[in-house]
Length: 235
Figure 1 (tube, rainbow, N blue to C red):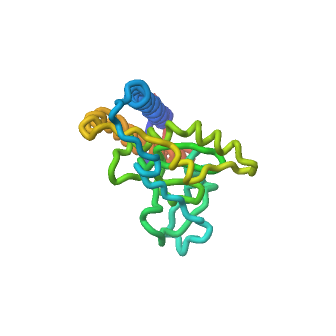
Figure 2: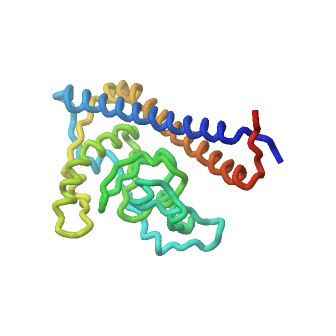
Figure 3: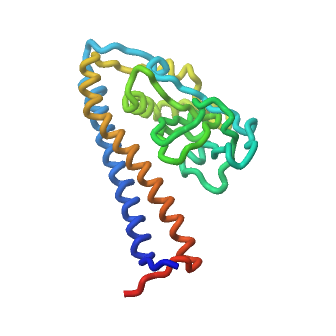
């Protein structure tokens, strides 16, 4: 049985997690400010225009109920709209990993829920499987921040389109992506922008991974404290 000043250390872990969350909010706000300055306020007259669905691939998820786990090892939690907002939980569904690798979602992937509750987010949770009604957004030609911020730029428009649907679960169509135009800077300009914004996004993703690790450590220590396996050090 070990001796450990549990309350102090658990509080320190929570404080560190909170600090990383606040740092990410600042990084996100800075990236958004730069995007607005470059592409809304100071856009070049000679910049090319392309539809949103031509700068990135929007991969729709699987009907994960068709892929139940075959055993307790080869499975992952399912990423639905609920998890995109609140994270993976004990109530999350599970699916088999016997699927194409492209449907696996990892920390740092850009996810866009296009049906129901619309949201664009850099995934900040554990590895999971992409469910239907969610797009995994990737690009082989443009940096992550570029297609992430452009998709997020049109989110208000997409929400308005979804809300105008007569169905109970509003959504957008791929045609709405095609009707959303993106400004493409000259190659050297985009490279210069990338040198500024890419490190911000990379730091956010690294912070998210650290948050995951710290939360796991906290959640491992707490039951040991409650069971008496770890004793509180008295001073």
